[in-house]
Length: 232
Ligand code: C5P
Image 1 (tube, protein in one colour):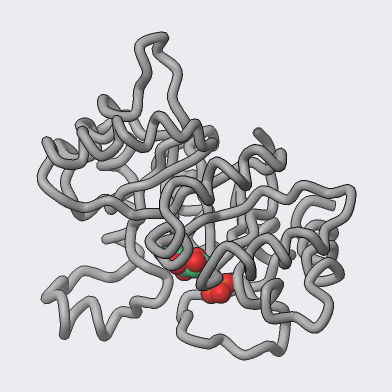
Image 2 (cartoon, protein in one colour):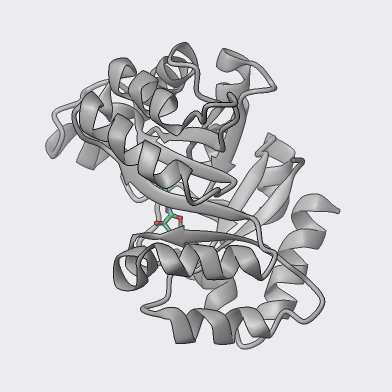
């Protein structure tokens, strides 16, 4: 899989999601199914969107003891998604367990990535809420190196961190980056953000775009704009 735009389908239910995807006539965008939709509709929504021909990033950000994560990943493996993830904060041991659980008998598995630090988290929250006093860039790089040590394929991070992650972990190590906004648009609750064109320049492999597409007056045009700016 090469560079691509992944649409975050953060909708409350199946109807809103399928109505949204129906607008993309003749196109099958790579979609992200996150907690909101998965917890509302269950695994069937993954099967249904997959049957329509979309690639799926199942973004459930698992974070628990290694044994539980391994078993949960074995359940998710049966959904045949293209990409899924865990929190790197769960430790190297937990990430190794996730990879084991996700790997099928024939050795195949979806792309497995780790969240470094959420793109809504800034330096102040890292220090005050989490008592982590290192610069956020060092924390992100360290978590990315841990993910690589555990045998994962890449990380979720801010697009602003893609270059330093590639420098630390190699250009083959994937950077999947939410925190994308068009120039001049509202940041919402995101802090470490940039535009699709800048994300391309910094070297993101995939951008994850939610509200700038889902809340746009013309979502298809917003998606095309992301594709042109990021993949063009
Ligand atoms: O609407 P917006 O473009 O901000 O959506 C970004 C999506 O990426 C959301 O679904 C959010 O859960 C997800 N995400 C994120 N930061 C991370 C990991 C995932 O914003 N580090």
